[in-house]
Each structure stands twice: as structure tokens, then as C-alpha cells.
Image (cartoon, rainbow, N blue to C red):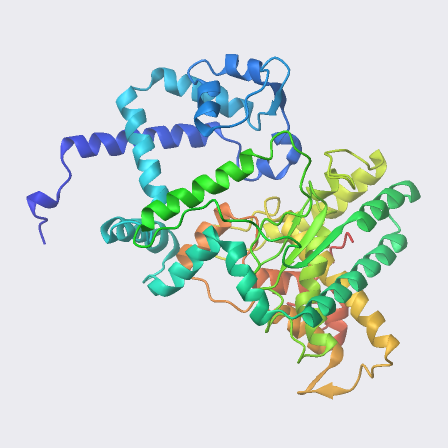
Length: 478
């Protein structure tokens, strides 16, 4: 069918598209690759504010800070971290060679794209969805509007929503049980560090110092965020979004020059996720994740340790993965390893890089072993120390490991619980995009690839050497 003439873009629209694409492409080429950003040393370039201002002559950084209402200090003495010097040098060149109208078009596009959603007219929302969800990820239809609006409330008023969520779904008894499990898994990691035959006593002391300094944040923050200065107006969806973003920006900028708030959370209580922060040296488990099927008072330790326990172990292990190991107990970017131990660590992690490089989830696109290394190390290390903690707890209560429940032994149920958290379906388009942009391996390989490196899994299910779930060369770091 021939398109109507009115549906075709005019010359000005084509030029605007080309300008935007040219700018976007230039900025992308000037940036570090996603794999390179995995190394914090690549992002550590302290510089005086005045020197940075001089190096980027086409951009008035002081005016930008003033527009943000950021605290302004002496540019000769105050320092900033220029994460990617090469990028900013290229920005300087690009801005010099680019017409002002093209830059304005690019900024307008960036703004429209950033607000597309439930706050904008449906035509904007639909176009954004058609490309970023349907074309890139294969998603056929939007989620119901009520789900998207609920997610937006969580994004913009997460801790206010969290107070209500906690009162209904996360009693103190559940918080205590989760904390007890976390402490048990930390103790297991300490014993595991003691048992390592490749690490020197000197590095072990520093590793355990860091482990014992980890702050455990369970469920929700000790102090709720105050939203009284945020103005929410009924019927003004776009205005509410912009004011919420301004509120959050002001809150972040107000931290400059003040002591670090180590009690702060970067996730909201209803979030079904968890994280480790290397600069805070803390593990964070929102109440939304501490729910069935991941964690439940109705399940026994085999299920809870295999599922939620492996997640707790996963976040702890992030403190000692290829990125996290470069930060010390106080969150400073410091090399606390002996040279020899550092080399041994790299030798062991190379095993996992090669293992995951060999997986081909979709045609012509392998998993990037270096990009996913941190998550793969955390998956394997987390499952291992959760297993150690579970075995220890089971021995304390004299659990019969051979007794069956639902047709499986306790050890088998532990392994199945771990695998079940990765039971997902992913469209080919989403999988292809994930492989090129995400530091997490596809879920199938986070289950099968990791369990293949666990001899305890093979033993519990009587798997033999040469079978798919038994790695030809077992990788193990922690």
C-alpha cells in the first residue's frame, strides 16, 4: 500500500533526524565501551574544576552548575571526578563543528524522550513504546496503565509508598529472619575465605576486614524520606513528574560538602531487586524482594537458602568480584591485594570469562564473558556460600539430608530453588539487546552455567562427567 503524501516526513524533519542521529553516533563513539566501564579505574580521573572548565571551552560548566543551583566553590581548589576525559574532549570538538540549530534539535529530542510515558499525550507514548519496547525488545503490547502508573509512583515517591507497603507486607519477624540469614551467610563467607588455598594470609586479613565491615540493610531505611517540599497537583501529570525530578536533583546536590549518609537507600522498599554498593560497602535487600516465592516463612531453609540465600550471597560476593575487590572496607578505591594474589584472582576469573564467552544464546551473538564477569562471579560465589551456610544450619538441627519432600532430597530442593528464580521467558529481540548492553547473562545461563560449576549439584542429582550439567573445567574463585 502506498503511503499517503501527508504521512511522509518533510525535508526539515529528515534534517532534524539526521542531525540527531549524527550527534548521538558521535557521542557514542567517544564513550568508553560498556565493558570498559566495568573497571572503576577507567572512571577515576580527579581534576580541579577550573582545569576541567578550561579543557571544555565550548561548554560553560559554571553556568550549568548555577542553573542546577549546585553549591559553587572555589574552582581553583575544588575537585571533581571527570569519569571519561576522552568523551569530554570529543564533546568539545563536536560542539565546535555542529550548528546551533542541530544541537537545539538534539536537546529537544532528548527531553521529549525522557518524559515519554504516562505523563505525555498518547501519541508520544506510543511512538516511544513502538521503538524502545517493540523494535528493540519485541514487546507486543504495553502493560496495563494502572501497572505503569503504580511503577511511576514507586519511582517518584518510593519511600512514601514504601511506608505503606512495609506496614502491610513486611512485619518485624520477617525482617529478623532475613537478617539472621544474612548474618549466617556472612559467617559462611568468612570460613570460606579462611579455607582458600590460593590467597595469602595477608590478603585474607584484609578481605575479612572488609567482610566484617559490610553494613546489612534489610527491608527499608531506618529513617523515611521527607517529601513535604514536593508539590503534587491533581490533574498535572507532567508537572508532577518534572517537580519530582527537580526535588530529587535538589536533594542530591544538597549532599555536596556534607558527610556521606551511609543510611541512605538507592532502592525503594517495594522493589523486587537487591544491590551491593562498593563505595558504601553495604548490601541492600528491599522488602519487595523478601517475599514469596523468593523468601517465605512457609518454606523451609532448603528453599529459602537456595533462592533468597543465594541472592544474599550474590550481593556479598559483589564486594569481592572483579570490580568490588578494588574497593576497601571503607569504600575507597584502593588496591589492598598483594601482587601475587591479584594475579591468582585474575587467572581464576579468566576461567569464567572463557566459559561464558562460549555460550551462544542467539544466532551470531555470544555472551560477553568480560562484561558479565562480575555478575557471574557473584552468582557462583553467592550460591556457594549460601550452600555452606545452609549445610551448617541443617547440621545444627540434625536435618536428615536424605529424606525426601515432594520427591526431592533437601539438597536437591536447595538446587531447584536456586534454578527456579531464573524461570523466565525472553523474546529473541530482547535477548539480542541484552547480550550487547547488559552486564547480566541471560537467565538460562545464570541457572545452568552456574550449577554446572557446582560439583555439589552434580553429586545431588547423580550427574556424570560429560553430561551437559557438568562443566568440563569447573570454575571457582570464592
